[in-house]
Length: 168
Length: 333
Image (cartoon, rainbow over all chains, first blue to last red; front, side, top):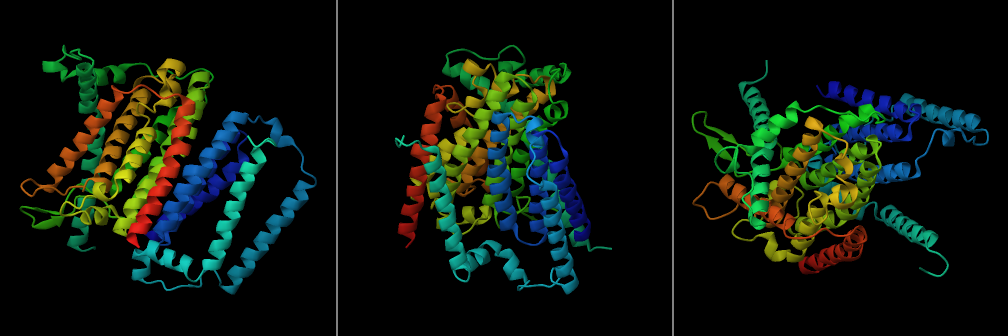
């Protein structure tokens, strides 16, 4: 039963991810990206982490994509802006994709993705939020703090960039 | 062959989903009538009076009219997106009700089966509701953009900015309640308020922020800038007609019900009340009071200007809600 759901979500996720780059209209691409985020959230639920799923919806679908659409609609990007050539972009694209593919193949052959990493018990699933919170504030406190500071820096940076020199 | 108990459980869930959906789809009928009557009485008029006694059949007449009207799609519209936008705005609001608890568990007389009055008790219910209602804004954005009309696009763009600005204070106000209860599940939040320990007593500022932000989230006056008829004709749904238009209206009413339900669950003790009535009755009574309150506000207050809307969101409500979280934290320590 779960496998059927997994395949539905996975196929739609990959399909919409392809659609993101295949569509010519930026708004249509944005919608496909949204669908993709949705499927990833569904996959998180299948992985027994409802908190991550809700956060995914909240942050990516609810906030990031709204901002994306805002910019896309206000700027009214035409087709022309997509033809701007990046220096050797095709070669770099192929290199990156091949590198990622090699990594995935290597990990799969090593049996890494199918290897269960943490305690996969009922208690951990039901108190998903609690477990995540405890881990973030104890074991992973330093990475968590560093990410927070990075985000704060980005916030201040964004304000500093948009402010003019008179400080208005 | 699965067990009999499992089949029964699945049947109950399907039954509950059907009942909740039917209720939500039929709710706009009495609500539109109520809204027009309340508006009329506030403005010293009679309101709808011709169709049925006191005009109670008016919503049915309106429904018939909307059903038989022509569904016009503008020539230069993005047709597929234009068609799907009302549905995108409707589905998330309905989906949010999947985790809303309506009352204590009840026992069905003949089957002797304990039935819970919610479809699902999620571990992250409140987060789920806040996340999924945030998605409803896409219906408005896409509707505005796909219409290929200036007014509609402006309505859509206003809506994006408004939603982002007010989602933050709303979520932060809810965090105060979560901090007190120590749980994200709505059932737990209500159970923690038993015996008149309603959160409104401990979180008055939180409720104030939550209420104002939810007014803005559901696009009601004084924050209905996306459909400001004074400057934008009708905003995002200016090009819509017939059933697609009524989907937008339905969304608006169900969203109002959801906002009332959330306010009751988070701050007003949910279904807790004096014991002489069943829990669900108390719940319905409280939600109705809030719905009336929303309508009352609509016909009492004028609309804010757009810059005022942004000022209230970012410069007043957001700092206040952060302050609320801080204060709650201090009290908990």
